Length: 278
Image (tube, rainbow, N blue to C red; front, side, top):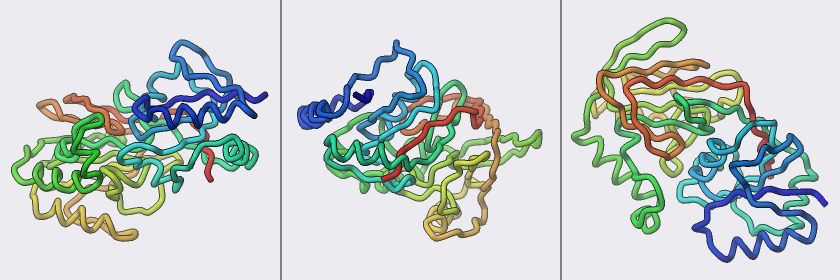
């Protein structure tokens, strides 16, 4: 009997518990443990949103080319939009079908200081758009709340004096914020890069407003929503290594989870996860 390790958002409740119990017809289902070292034959079933994925990659003890069946059931589910996968009712026949198809994409793990991430890191105004966790406003308003809060933060937000270092080249600039991503979406489906395909190769993308002006920031956001556009008054750089610095701490979100620092180092690691596509 094939083993599946389940990692899920406990807020999903009794319905998910019943779904997981239905898998026992074909699978031995174990709950994820931070203490256990898993072999490369392990298949993980991850159910939740971007925060659940973030929890998993920062708690698992050692990466070993794990295969992931990801069922997106969060508020934003931005990474699932990049993978083009949707929620479904979990049952043994569907999971068996997904695993037997053996159709997956290799997704590199990135690091922001000491934190792993899969999708994106936002800093400055973009990071202040939403509160972390399962707040009432996110439940009631969903994606619309992101737009309302984004406008509120942009009108009267701090202008960050930043410098970035890429391949030993240093540039200084004023900005309302930045995004570092290998995925395409953040904030509940808002496109955060000009390309329409993810960076699952050697590089990731750094995007930042370059003049600290609200008008050009809004223009950049609108332009990015188009297909394969070119940005003006903004940096968009492909790299595998980036250092961002400021004279004060920058509020950030790493796949939706908050932290802050005045020096942030981004790298693409040698570790990968294999996500089944279905």
